[in-house]
Length: 180
Image (cartoon, rainbow, N blue to C red; front, side, top):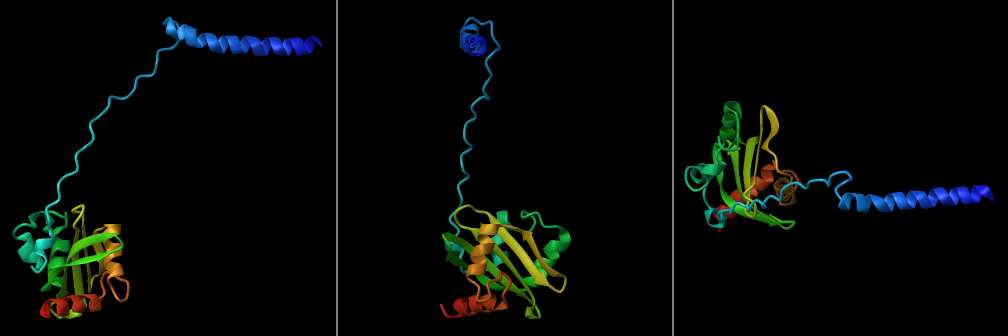
């Protein structure tokens, strides 16, 4: 019986001690309150220029003007990677808008001088966010220079073989621009 009273007494004492912690803090005798991090203002999203009217231009004309922000240098490509992209886009196809899966991008494709089987490249820009995807497939292999999962999924969705570097997609783009 003494054990029950003893246990009940310890439980009551513990509850009183915990309740008094709030009172001690109110008197300034307890531990200091945690300081919150200062509220920072949310970063305003950068406005994205409307890229839709630029469909119908070739990539190098695009980056020579309104799209300078998407030049190989601005995308952070090394000199060797810029050279690969330029070789794989020696026969450029005019840019076109591609949509699917809730995304839209201005897509610039091109083929190597020897044809799309020798090399192909793509630079695509998300019209909603301005994010870019840049990649090349050539004699050195396949490499994504500026990865972007959302745009890559869009390119795959619009490809008959579900790959971003599909020569058929490039040839379809070429046919679409030849017969508007």
